[in-house]
Length: 103
Image (cartoon, rainbow, N blue to C red):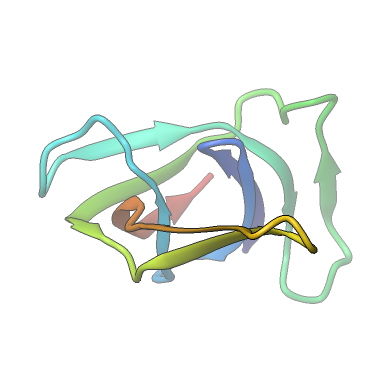
């Protein structure tokens, strides 16, 4: 099964067993959670359910594996001929989750 889910204002195509990084979730490590799917399809695409915006009765279960900080993102601003330059960096907080089941 393939599902499209929305976590942290981002959409992800997921299958059972996938491990993905999402924006930080307020959950403890080894905790479990559920989210509704926006689209559910089988591998061949013959049986597809499309939600408006979510598929009724759908449930994608996940398990939180890790809370961590991502790689540094650089933000560089410059105005030409004005001697203005600004270089700022930050490391986003992320959560690694594993997809357990799609129903």
